[in-house]
Length: 427
Image (tube, rainbow, N blue to C red; front, side):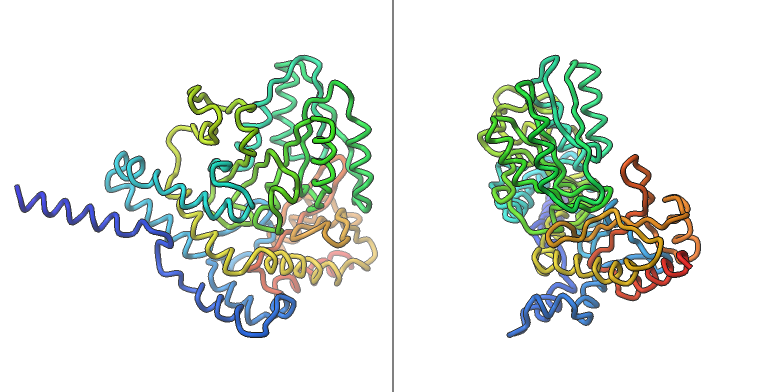
């Protein structure tokens, strides 16, 4: 019996040894950090240094059988993130109820702290959820709204958000007002003015995308949150495509309520997301799932979703480590550089049109292209069939085209192939 007890204690200690972040050898991180931090080497020089980005590309495990230009849907994880989640899954399977709830659940704060650092907020203002939809629907269903109360959004918001508002309209009798966004949006003031003009004494809530998923257009969020605050109207910010892609803090965009997916531009495990609610606003929002009254002013009331993948949540820490090694500012510049690289080679071709405005600070990694004579579906199919370029067709009343979204692992040769394909299709 004593030998068996000693053996069990040995196994327990071995299982606990791997809990501290980072979980595994970070592989490429030292080389990437050393290259980036060489004396006198600026971000301006690094943004076009293919030797540096070649090291970054080696951290990913993407397939050689296709070129993924739909990172706006979901992005791959670097190898260390995959390894961390695998290790944590193996640990949990040794005794799920013990390791998940007694050990791994207590480590979630080690993920919230660096997320809060990225967002410029406090860890007790962050809830870990499964995606932007879950985060934002906590907010859209969480405000007390009465029949006749108005919610203002746009006709280009994410379909799940519009579906949630339409359901509240059917169930609760609220009024949903959808502003039309010009395509392309060359003057952000137009949108600000349309929000302002739509507000009435019955307006109780505004929803605004930080970046529109259809076109990659970055919207003037700070001006709209300021507008809402000046009139005492809460503003929900859909940041699904900006967190991890462009540098900002919650204070800089004026956000009191913000939801995002972490498996997009942060390259965290699939099915991970984040909800931010400013501390003093938490008590005013009902959680999507039931919570005890004692938790009413705690951000954790939004996290009662039942059994979840704690290994996926904890592996977010590895994604943050990789992200911070590069830095949000440099990452944003590289993503815009990649967009400029391919767009500049085709934007003068006859029959080529862009649904994205490329004014400074109004775009990032996502662009939407239309070619005369081809439906979005035909263009998408041709790019994949003939060139193995994986994109997504957008067929919206205001936006018809193909969305192209590279990421930092995308090679210039991949984009050269895209340019060649567009030249051939136009010809």
